[in-house]
Length: 185
Image (tube, rainbow, N blue to C red; front, side, top):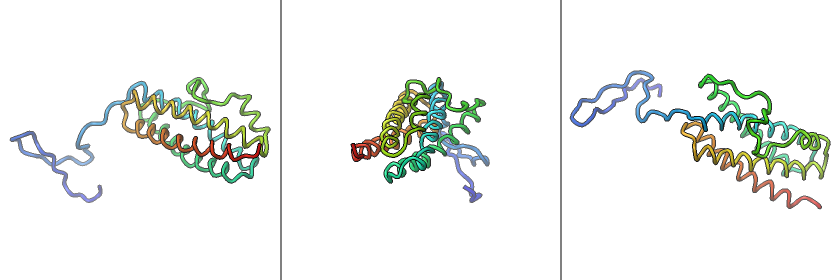
């Protein structure tokens, strides 16, 4: 990477090697994207956008340090993931879904408009409880989506993204449950 040193590519047994050309990928070619890879990105982008909408409400509605920390963690992880998946879809010649596009992520823990309105209206302990309940369900949906990508996807970048989502959000689910249990009744 940037050393200008030649990369030698061995030939088949008994055949001479050669020098790789600039920009040539050496090794196994990446697997092509399949429908489940596209479904994952097209579903996860609006899913993440809704999570970011929910975390944007935290600072004005709670003083609970644990919830503020969870919201910062979600924002820090999901903002670059949206950018990466949007860029990947663009490379495939596909537009990223607009807004929350509920139809792509239906059945994966998405909050309804009524639930989002209730969250916007809540403050203090009521907000804390509702936020944690909705976000836990939301994360469980993302873990389900990631599991489906890991089972059926072929694209290396989307599979790595799914692994990150699966592990990161599983950890956050456990943290949210702990914070919820610690809230006053």
